[in-house]
Image (cartoon, rainbow, N blue to C red; front, side, top):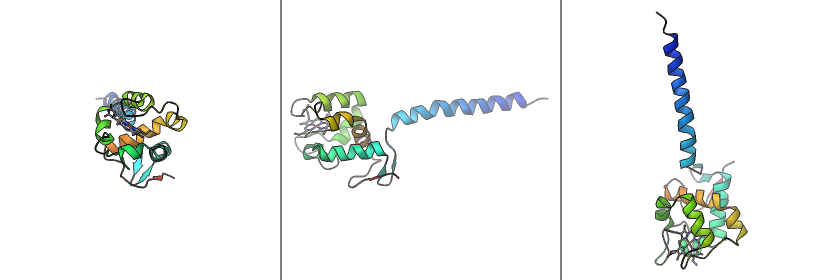
Length: 131
Ligand code: HEC
């Protein structure tokens, strides 16, 4: 009896599974977080959120206020394309940021930061960049 081919198949199977799972997991979480430390792009997004005054309307960490949407809820429904569209082009009382270079260039990190907040993975308050 020769069991080698079966072992080989099992091995190939787990490789295939690993290959399939990895890109999907990366697509779902555009940020890396460990406590209050986040990856460079997400850290940049947090800085933009504060410096470009998203926080004056949407609250210090995205929770919103009376007349302003809670972005932690919004990001459960908005995908990155829809997020980019509303932030760059504006909508009603939401200003358009397409002429703001920091926001336009940093939109990936901004999305990653707010997605992480929305997922409950990134804490409110001060963040640090991962070494
Ligand atoms: C002057 C206040 C103000 C500022 C500054 C502001 N927003 Fe908004 N934002 C709003 C309002 C009001 C809405 C709701 C728009 C509507 O009624 O359609 C909104 C909507 C949004 C939405 C869509 C929410 C949803 O549920 O569809 C996103 C995403 C968003 N803002 C992100 C940002 C980001 C990121 C920044 C900073 C770059 C920012 N906003 C700055 C007022 C503001």
